[in-house]
Length: 174
Image (tube, rainbow, N blue to C red; front, side):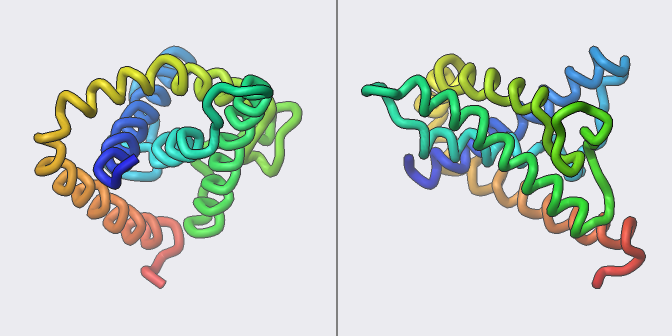
């Protein structure tokens, strides 16, 4: 993958993650808006995990299915666990909490959602990503100009959110 493709897929899957969480919130709580860490419509965990899966899941070959299935479970779970730990450590707040569910670890990950991530990851690899590749190919020339601007907007959102969240939850910028 080129740097341009990585940026495209990261933003695309981060946006899909935001949409997925809000749709889930709508069906489980009756409210479409679920506050995320960032101010904009991004969920970076959902951008990072697919990129790791695309880089690490082997294509075809002997034993592919077992390795792919394990990576589809493990990678998003590890990304979610690290993200939850970092957010709690840096900002003193949880954006999700599985501590009331069975088979959980630190409230950051749990077996039920790990299974969900495994299924979603397999769907992403076999169904969604081929469509994302086609989408990238059709917008590649425009992406070369728009991509850096959109990635800059994401970076501004990240910096702005980190500064304001630290102030909001810690009482200072330090």
